[in-house]
Amino acid sequence: MAKVLIPTPLRQFTAKLDTVTAAGPSVGAVLDDLTAQYPDLRKQIFNDEGKLRSFVNVYLNDEDIRYLAKAATPVADGDTISLVPSIAGGSTMAAPPEEAVLTKDEILRYSRHLILPEVGMEGQQKLKAAKVLLVGAGGLGAPLGLYLAAAGVGKIGIVDFDVVDFTNLQRQVIHSTADVGRKKIDSAADKMLAINPYLKIVKHETALSSENALEILKDYDLVVDGTDNFPTRYLVNDACVLLGKPNVYGSIFRFEGQATIFAAGDGPCYRCLYPEPPPPGLVPSCAEGGVLGILPGTIGLIQATEAVKLILGVGQPLIGRLLLYDALGMRFRELKLRKNPECPICGEHRTITALIDYHQFCGVPNPKQPAPAEETRVNDGEIDVTELKAKLDRGDDFVLIDVREPHEYRIASIPGSRLIPLGEFPKHVGELDPNAEIVIHCKMGGRSARACAVLRQAGFEKVYNVKGGILAWSDKIDPSVPKY
Ligand SMILES: [Zn+2]
Image (tube, rainbow, N blue to C red; front, side, top):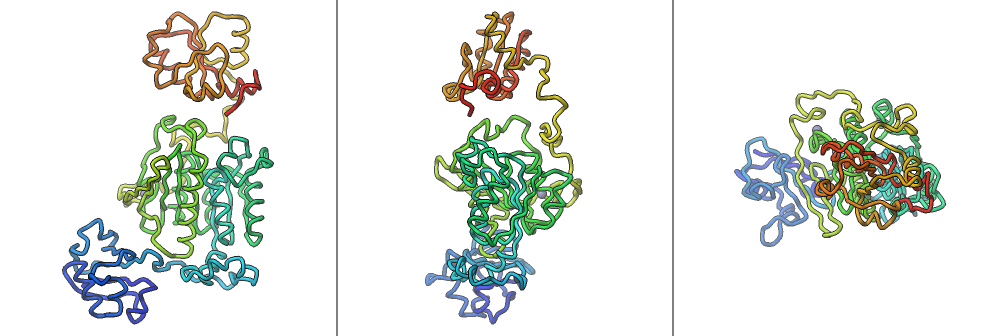
């Protein structure tokens, strides 16, 4: 005998039962037995040819039978079969509290939701009662904040400590040109309240850290991760796992994005997918690698959709599935994610039971705790832009190399520099004089530091990295050099 779980919309055909037992050696046979017991159900889930309708997915225990042997998938005694229609699945969220009753103005505002049976009055009240935490008010946070506010999520917390700058405006559409210089948290809150004055916004003007994360997250129903760095990703994941809050995840890079839901129910977590962070510097940030301005819109709205579905308890959430988006090819792909039984935080033998030092874990410096006077300190093997300018003015005998990409060189360059992109650098080492003094710069100093290391390894001794790169040059030496 197998247990068949019936979703809410189909219970009218099973005498209101949410669980029915049926027998058979395969999924197809169990469904035949089920529909023999409840003939009205048959035409709901099978078409005239006797095939399962495409809007119904069937799961044997936790596996979609499409990935098993379909209708021929063998069924053992005690197995559970779930019918999951693609529009409305079984709602697991509790009924909304009394105070979430909608006013007349709100009923008008949410009219297009209220006439959707999958949302309706009860769903809209669930949205009003929902508490969502948005981590980051940047690229992903912008569409998330605007649409979650518009959709009627009642309480939205925002964690951010950044200030709007001109390079944000190409994608962070919640901020306007007039907001440059303002705190992102204020700019975002103003826009969201302008869309929906019934919204309650809680501002957490801080960097999420191991010290404050549990305290901040505990008041919310779910977390939407719009961060842009690995330490915060692991921190959000671990805090969500420890507190049992779903984490709606999205990430973007250049023309590609990913989305899924971590830490929900029996689903996998971020550490199940990526047990360890990449080595520092391997995956460039958006500031270094660039990002298509529209991309965070696409991915952020997938996250917003999943957040709203979780609140409403409708559809099939993106749990255990990693959605991959390729904007250049305009393709979506989906990978099955599995919970890792060896996962250190959600597995069977957990070794992480409290938040850790995530900057140390990811091998990157903590921006909240800069080394004293780091701003002005120039390390061995480094020169600052003032010294570079003095050397150029004095006509010192040295070679200035720029290791950025040709398209960056066309945006801005330092006069007298020779362009050798970092990727081609090793094969040009032989052209350089090991006795010459060599000064290397890039955009911010990261790539040039790697190029310096290549030369030092090859036996070059007079090699200097320009601290702060061409951005520092623009700030301190020549403001006519554009920043990007
Ligand atoms: Zn895990």
